[in-house]
Length: 378
Image: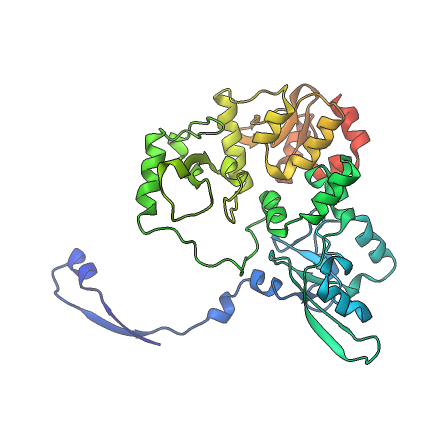
């Protein structure tokens, strides 16, 4: 590819050399830059493209190379036509380290799975007609594994009534699920079904004015972010990014923004949530005796654990706690300071906290060893 570029402005800034036109070629290497995420939307074969030990389920959510992934069996056998008509009748999609996957591992059937990461709810499947044996393939809206929902207590699945569990299953959104647990990962999965952002050309100026007029204060939780203004967004209440009237706009911190309906495909890092909760604590925005307030402010990845704690009437947890470890400030996602019990999303600081006498859990470990966990908290 040949480019002709006028660098005169740059050269004038260095010396008065006049117009200089430079010709050069750029060799395309786009194939080398293609992200693993784009491959995961198509599906990779476990044991061939990806090895079993490359799938990390230590945090409960399945992870490959920093990306959220799902496991499923694309071969639907002679049920393929039924499954294409109603995907919920097919083999389920696994999003967590559940008892079904554990069973398949120990019975030598794990290599039947493909690894995939897509959020539109459609998955490549194949099979054959029972009578004619003709090969059939397509995409089906497969349902999520209920054991996965249970082990994560997703939306309180493990502690709810049968009717509520049925609703959580039937209304399950893979896009929403990935957002809830985004703090564990580098980015959100690609959503190829979503088109352009649809923001108007003057949106940056509108958003800046809204945030400035609010003195960089979140309209929901009240956290003041003048020194961390990148953590304050402008949210379209009805989800239409072209409607910029003040009645349709709210200034929200990124954590509150992520938790709104109609917010779009929003990734919020664990570091950003920790920073916001540190500021909320310093500004007295918490009520540690109210689990509803804690759940509103905590990282969404911890909500399954918090719902379990609430249902079991555990003492209220605290957010925004920071420990000074030899001038290295360690932020804790969730803790019970008097009992020195901490729950971390990023376990890199677990060793340092344990050296100070803290008992440290992942949310997944706390849920799946709840008797041990609650004994430490009470």
